[in-house]
Amino acid sequence: MTDFTWLLAFGAGVALAALYLFALWQTVRLAPRVRHPGLLVLASLALRLALVMAAFAGLAQTGRWEYLVAALGGFLLVRALVVRRFRLQIESEKEEATT
Image (cartoon, rainbow, N blue to C red; front, top):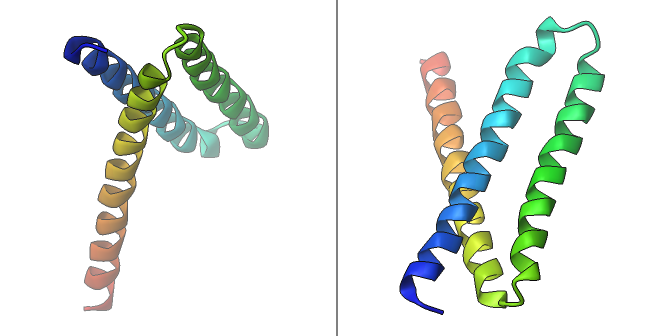
């Protein structure tokens, strides 16, 4: 696997995670304003999972497990960074509330 191909697979994972998490964030923001929030959350989950599974299945079809690992690494890296950012934000808001 060339360096460029590895970077493309990693970038695909990063883009996929960004899209997945952006859609999740939009769902969370929109849920309180819709008539049936549970239906919105379930539909959003189904669409997000279908997108991620289709993308990873497409990578698996290439027959190169390295692409799949690189994409998964990109996906997990973005997820970890977003979770860390929001965890730090929540902790700082808790500290401000107690002072």
